[in-house]
Length: 284
Image (cartoon, rainbow, N blue to C red; front, side, top):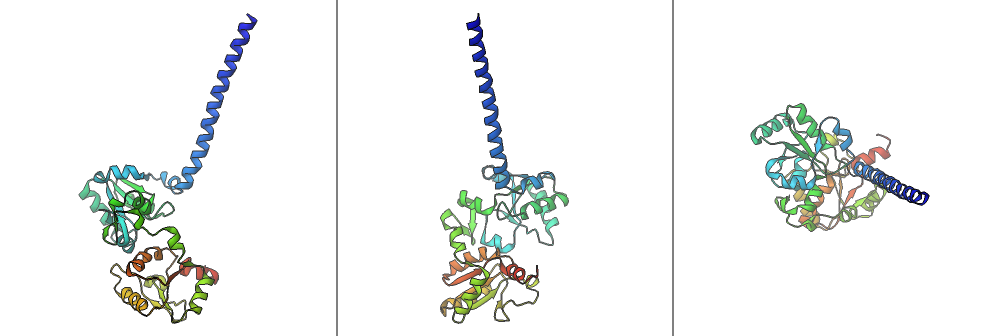
């Protein structure tokens, strides 16, 4: 009996240890998984409380015919790279409310908003604004257009043509190699012969203020790049280096696609854009 009792005790302890180990393993897995999700998609928790649910990449890919996809970014960003068949309704558009209501009524489908990636809040703000405008079913593809283009290039449009291959996207390293901090940006301008300095901020963003003592050209980005195109081609022909400044260092990411398509090789961007200059001057 004592022997049998000892055996049962050992078995009992082993079972308890096995259960405890399983619980601990599950707890560790949940702890590891929780922060990873929050870190990978930092805006989800913030907007979950207002009823804006995310769509994963493969779910969207499998439901393209059952969802109306909305690009909430600027028209220039949309013209550069967008999900195929997505409708451009910029968050900043004056007729945003009317446009989303019309699309929801005509399509009879949930609206799925997207922008540039996991740290871009434009898609969430657009979805929330659509709900406030009376659109009942809204969701957000918060992985963003780059994640989509990497995984589904066959359903992506680049500069008006099917992307087809993800390797046509400009890699982060290739973009960063063109970005200079403020000191390096000014130093390269000063050491260059006859540089072309271009401020691509909108009229409202620029507010008549030249950051380069009127040595820069103010050429806001437009979908057709008509004015910018002449400037770029002249600089290429004359072998003059080009230096571009935007508002926050984000628009130049899209401009790079145009510059590469035009065959430009001597061009640089200011890290952080005009906001970085203002910050260094203590104006922000």
